Length: 634
Image (cartoon, rainbow, N blue to C red; front, side, top):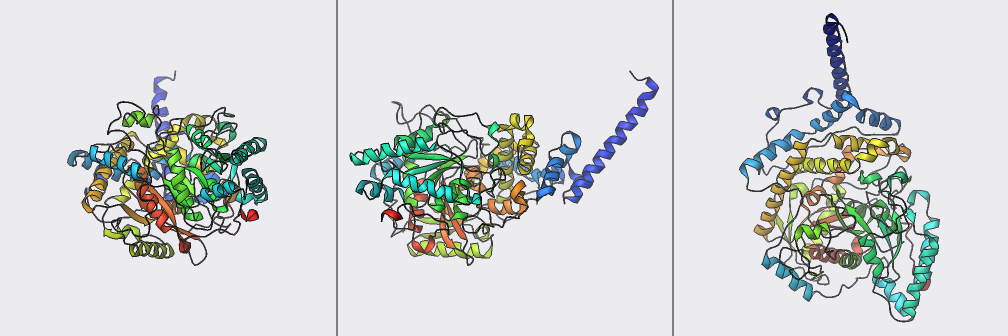
């Protein structure tokens, strides 16, 4: 032990060291454009947002944007252990106004009659539930419209007629996969080819005997690397060591598809842990955009979207916690449906509060067919336990999820009675070409009889912070053990994302739940007041962004671009709403543009009907490397 007379000297040294660390962190934060002298801001110094204020505000999120060597350096600093790393991470979060989230949440707690909501669940009234059950009984079979892609129905018709066989289509698909350039890599891992051909031969034999299992029999599909496929290692886009090894069972979603006769090709490339909306995986050195290989494809379900766009399979499974289905769908010119939170049950109880599964499809009809298969309730699943009994139990009641249906899907010539809410300031907060194409799409729906109603949605800027707090904290928590044990197996941008997520405070997470509860109540009021069918927006606020060459090896952290991609995404994720991205044509430079419909809970049928109405040649396209797997048989 030090002598007593040495202790003041040691205390002074420690104090000076603390000042030095603080000065370094402040200087570093200042160089990055943050606010170093408000590392721990009080609520008293925060600009107060008045609850319900209709003013449209867009606060641009700020954070380091870099690629290559600079990105590696930034990741090292932001992810640093000790006081310096903690100060830098809080500087980044505080500079983006996280205190505003807490201020608004306190107002909600004291002034509004809306409880905080951890999960975005909505239980229907008895009348609403009965209406869904009536629609389910009256729904007609889904019919496909003519388009540039080979749909599930096209493959099924070709197999039934004998014009093609599942084995022949599989062979041409694998040849096309092998011929793709590396930057258009679709799969992270494929099922053994001998197994694929065995399944295709079995399907071909069933068609020969005129006993196919369903319209899916022999149809090729793909699964995002986020749920288990028998014989493969599910890694969520990360290093193979992050997976649990070769899986011996399929996830429940995959099993349901196999029971219909679908042939699962494999797991598709995704951004590492789903941490980027840009869609490029530095680990896989792919994929890029099929319409322009110098641009991003959107993510994180980029491999699923790319494979559909290229014609390798008509539909794939995606997951969406921050636009991961809708973003690549819009940037690659296909249809992407994010289902209501709790609608699609993965057997791993994959129940993140912002996450929903859904189809990424070549056309609206395939999205509808796929949805009807994957959305069947599972009695033992967490979602079913949360909502209550399912139709398979004798005490089935109105608190349960309504039956899956695609009511009205084929009624696309007359859209009278369809009311589309548009928040014009939000709608037009995007690049000029995106705005133009969105207006063209909206005018098209108006011509078919849809009515447009002006609406206002307050506090979208703060809701974006709630989404940031919720999804970042959840992502870090889900990967905390691996991140602490093997951080250097991750890409630099992912390390930064997980480090920032770990700096989210408990009060900020709780504040996000209060804002979720308030916004869900507010949206419910808007839908009821105006009788809305949905809220119409562009899908992405910009055209597919260019990818710097320095990002090829390290990836890129570009907060400005990421925030622009998320502008129309987070509302549906935070509130658990179903929504769909549908093609709206090409820009003058030949890049895809998408538009989005956000519907009420459990109203996937409305999303699909509008997408089917939009599924016309003027809005559809295929990329240069598109492959027609049925062309040789025509």
